[in-house]
Image 1 (tube, rainbow, N blue to C red):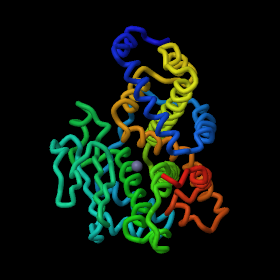
Image 2 (image 1 turned 60 degrees about the horizontal axis):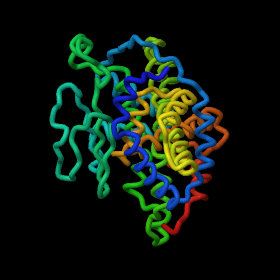
Image 3 (image 1 turned 30 degrees about the vertical axis):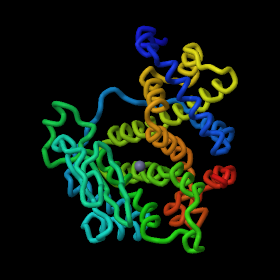
Image 4 (image 1 turned 120 degrees about the horizontal axis):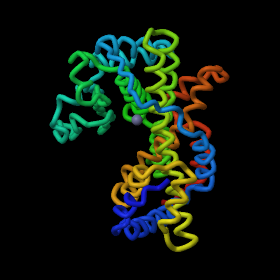
Length: 350
Ligand SMILES: [Zn+2]
């Protein structure tokens, strides 16, 4: 049931702001001419999957830092020796264009410091920053550890979840590498990257990384002795985070539709959304604040929702080897069918 006290707190100016912000989204939607019906449809089928089990007790599996890097290498090698080659370059800092920055999140406080490329040197989340052919990969470790847990495990240790962050961020480089070092098809043809190309890349930017996370879970279960419960828990947590974003994106589309059709979003409608799509108060707050204040958060939610939709196809393709073009699929997730479906509906005049 909805906690009405919580809602009262949100009500102060919240609905008004939300209604105004939604108008902005509707305008944007119209100018972009994206096939939102299609996106709505596929997201709806995705979020029909309720959360996979999220257990309350976190199983922390400590893992030595060098062990973590060696598993990362073995894992990428098991998929493709080319990925191994690239990863070792990155880890050993042999590629002058890519810097990897791994740090204990509990030991840094300078989240705003920028280097000569204007990259933020420490970020609270894993991120790849790129500019002018240069990339900085930030990998904070132990992010999931709180209080006592942080003290208990050896200072030198990372956790199994950190391994997922490392694999995720390095997987971004398999996409970005091409983007930063090789000219795109348009550039070769002497054309500029179109807005349409960039949006497609943004929207599909997490597909490869999420697929690699899924493959990592399989790899760990098969090849290591880490507790199955820990692997399962991390995997579930990450899938749930994806599903949560998909529900938020989907609900946002429904909010825009409602505003368009009825002229106003009411509290009743939000309550209905929460009930129908299993959203918590926190989810609604997060959705509302990103609609009102943060287009960047909205983009991130889109990326994870769409990425989560494409990832299973990448994994399946890899496993069944129905295509000989596995590498191609991994390199440019935006070549996936979903992107084509999305892309063909973009209005190129913008
Ligand atoms: Zn990512």
